[in-house]
Length: 148
Image (cartoon, rainbow, N blue to C red; front, side):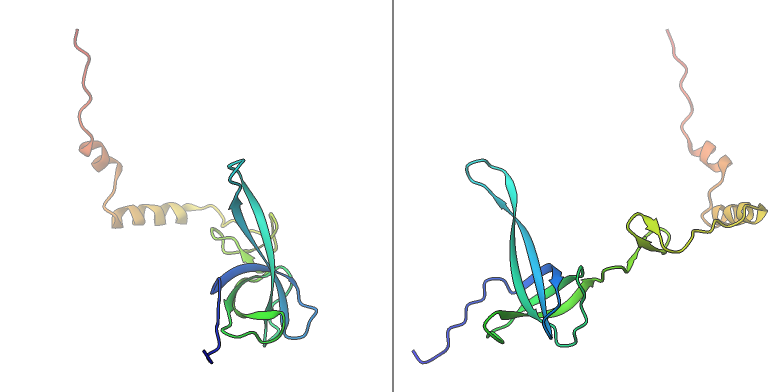
């Protein structure tokens, strides 16, 4: 057989960048859970991959998506950086939309001033949804009195 034999175990891998000191190469650690057959407990198993980062766009701490190459670029580099899933330091709170560093907000939170405008907008929203206190009381079943 004159053809080249290619074996790729995992085609897509998600991991955390732990080093970028090499030019156009990122060192990525992938952690997965493995079941111990005797203890029946899961433990973390880590493996380190070297991935080709052509644009040198990732930094230490980024969560990245790697794609396995069909043939190795060098002795150790067998994967290619496809996408940065989570950039380190650019975490946004989903509720407020503000940037977060750890458990602290980077930008100060500002509460809107309380006034009658909020009540007016609330009643307008209720009217748009056709909800009022009277209609909810009318829709409720009548209360039953205990009989002995």
